[in-house]
Length: 315
Image (cartoon, rainbow, N blue to C red):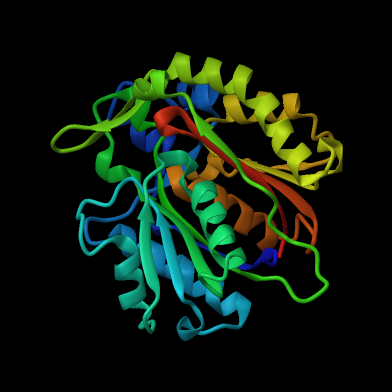
């Protein structure tokens, strides 16, 4: 078994931007109310003809181009999403068709906001075990489709987008670029974040999620660093699920990553669920805010009260 690394990243967001002032014309809210409670200023919203797999394919194509690869080089496609309306073909199969791939294995994973870090670990395990050579790992969600646009406590949070990573084996003698995953859940609190009903709608118990995230997650995240053999103060970046700035900032502080760049993409993109971590990481790398090879903590959490994290080396 060999280690793996992220070879390249890509991200994509719809063109339409919904500001807090726009939302104030739709529900009883204001820019000040939204900013003070969740720290979000804008979010991107897809149109009715922009599907989850279309968002995913755009991000995947950018990641492939950044890696200098073609679709034929991929033999495993994993799409983390909780907003796919159709059950079959799954989003991974549709992405493979859009990109004219050969015959990859195609799987969707629904672990909601922790979906990307679960999918990244799954790809790492598959390549390590020899079941795949190169994988596309995509987080893509169209949260606008499941938003309750009459509920000001939840609709102000949500945005659409996708992020993708190319995962491959490391070169001989090279240290692994994806560290061990630490994952789990709190099943008895699973109803705290929900996408239920017909049509499906997003709802959550905001205060319960906030208390759980800010008190229970920091020691788990520190244990992720311990498994990777790195001290929190040596991290170059911390990319948490972009749920709410009022969760991200205290959790990052409690982890002890005092020298790290903290991803705050939620301010401009809102909560994009499984897309949030790969999008935020891709933007940090694209802007040159973290160097190639620098260690970054990825930590997803949310729906099902699931969590998963690993330390990676930036491409």
